[in-house]
Length: 193
Image (tube, rainbow, N blue to C red):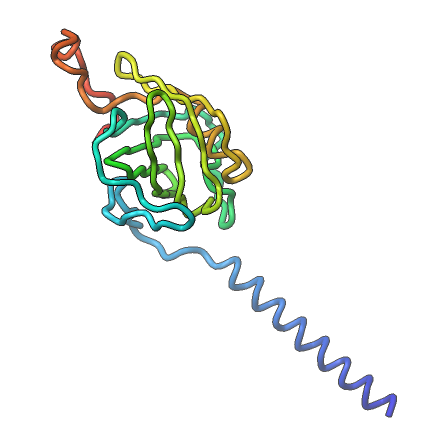
């Protein structure tokens, strides 16, 4: 009886070792070569109302496309299970369009989309897939083609969403209103669509 249990135990350990080696081999495989096409930051997939109803599709004071360049030279870091909204070096695009926000990191292809509302200088983000139960509240200021965001409260992705959005000023890809007189002197920021 003891010999039979020992043989069964050895077989199980060999099977477990073979499975572990197979998993390591699969994990070490490189992605297919060639150009990988990443979705546009303005893809048309609407947010899903995870915990909060979608806001009505009405224009807001923030509507438009914004770009920032994170100069961090140590990124992007290859990662299969990185935290969402992790600040990475390179070009980021942020789009607000009638209650739908989209964010996109050009170098890694990471993206997300959710809902937003604006009330005065308060911006509220919700229905964001990485943080379906988290609602982010921010202060914002759009002046002279620059959008600054200040975190009031946001637990999304270990607070990384707030750090990412507030760390660097976003350049507006829309010319300022003509009535300010600045429209004739405006030059479109690099990397704007």
